[in-house]
Image (cartoon, rainbow, N blue to C red):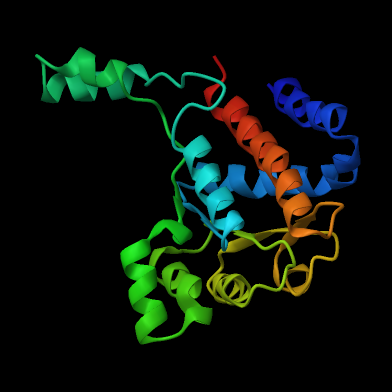
Length: 215
């Protein structure tokens, strides 16, 4: 199993040699996310603009099958069939196991209300306070590492024992000092940073899937 997980990590520098410098941080981020899942915790993501799209993308890969089908366990299937004998097979056949995750950037009604009524710089921090508990993980996307609403979310997360992973550009910005770890891709221009972020989080999602749902 360990070899399967590390193989996902080893593929990354083959396709993106520049990202070889991120290997140790990616492996450490995987460890935080794996421990979160084992504890029954929640992975939260956030970001602005294109990074908001990345935050949602991560959730999409975690909450359903990414490279594998993630079939339900026999126990899960039996619970559904017991509750709904006539529809049990259909329901179970069309469900996949999930790694609990939520994008804070996608909560439009809440975020727009909070931005209007309270403070734009605290919009993600408010959600971390509401959703987060000790042992959960927050992944904050900021190409500069200085986005105020992402940085403040990481500060609040740290205050309550939520582990923080910063996805940033080369410098790491403020998040380099605030987060438990930062994955600093070797680029400074916004679009280039975001281009590198995608294969990094795809690798993390593939590693987690291999760890828990390997067929």
